[in-house]
Length: 86
Image (tube, rainbow, N blue to C red; front, side, top):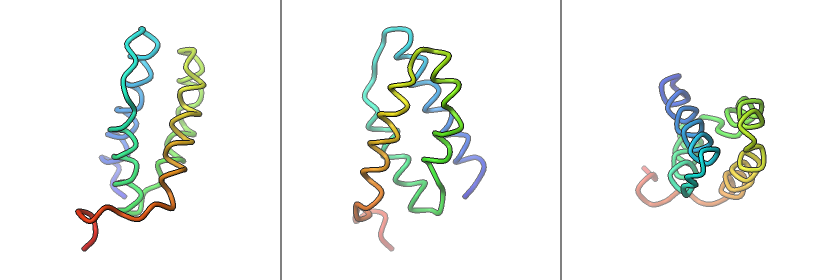
């Protein structure tokens, strides 16, 4: 997995958490979709989320990171969408 893709994912999650902390909740659907793409390409989005626990907790958004992990974990066994199948 490329470091650029990991950094993009972490940046997206950080932005999501900051927006929630500022009172502007957004849907995590784009994050879940990117996590699925990362996993399909050999990445580990759940590991990346674990690295953001302290950041989320400092913002008071620890529950949001747990929710993201649950949503991404639920996608883990889902089949890849047709657009990603070679």
